[in-house]
Image (cartoon, rainbow, N blue to C red; front, side, top):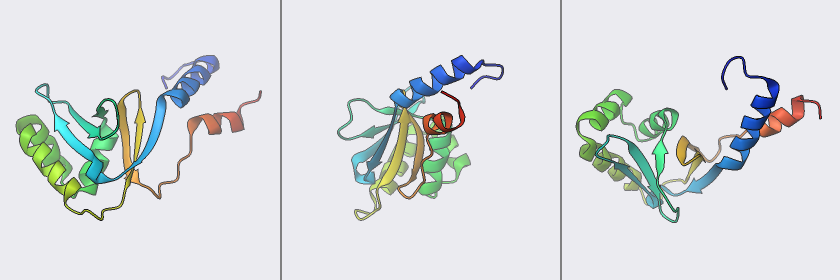
Length: 133
């Protein structure tokens, strides 16, 4: 939210986000990392209509989950995107028994890449609890 937003604007944005976000529990075997010629990486999830652009938070979480140092992850994305895709996909698919991941999305962007034990607290629920009718 932008600083100085009035309450009506904040409520409107929280409600918009509530309708736009999706949380998916997905096996890593159903994911493919792809970096386009423009240097933008996305995550394809089999069964989903379109790929999700990977946000900064999700990029850090994905790199951490795969034990790829973030500086190296970023360098591959800038200088060797094919190598990045190969490394990420190799590690995503390395263990057929790997636990599913909680993939949080909004507006066709991957906003988080988490364990399924992550406790979700939704902005809309928090807003409804603290604001008067």
